[in-house]
Length: 110
Image (cartoon, rainbow, N blue to C red):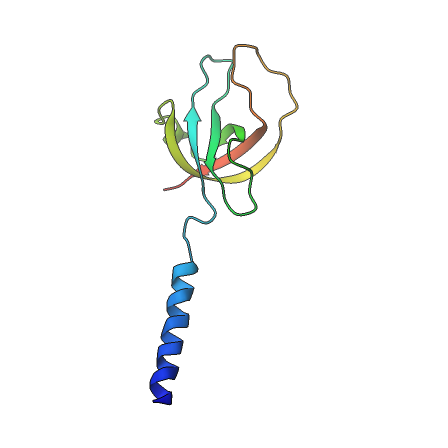
């Protein structure tokens, strides 16, 4: 009986380890918005954040690590991405462009 309980305990702990592991734990979800003119940058608004990450509704001027895939994105498309690096945006922008909180390099999920 003790042997059966021990095996069940080991299996349940192992199963909990797999359940707690989320492969998307490092990926944000957001909405991509194309810059409306050549002077305006592409913007992503975060709709789902990661643990200890930037908050939901934060906006980012984005540069993509894979620019060929980024050219196929449609305006207002939902994307899943990882932020490679970011910093607070302090530069002035055109009045007819969307404004964002941060400049960021992002990598799209495959």
